[in-house]
Length: 139
Image (cartoon, rainbow, N blue to C red):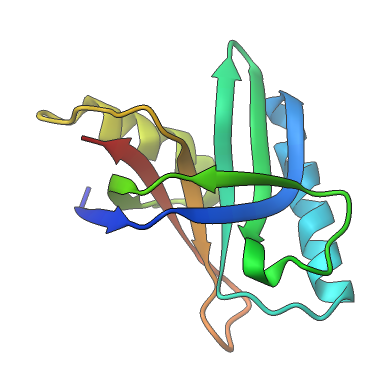
């Protein structure tokens, strides 16, 4: 797995939140994608932000950068603090996300820091598809 390290400034994500089972995550993406299409909001990236996880319950936001979300309603906001992340491209689509996170966490020399991990979906202009990256906060 190829990785890179990225240092980011603080940024805000706004979107549709979930506090419940992992199985409900796709429904939040359906709501977000429908709202973006209906409101004709074009984005180059979107984020699946994990705010907390305990057992099979997750606090998650399917969202976009806050400056693009002004016309979305009934949304939740989270601030991703500035800091360093180890980033890897996900192979195999959405079903490969968890294994990509697991591989990153098992890497030698990785020291996690207290922040949010997330998926980043990169929507190439003119493409119907997207690439997925996982971002894990590190020291």
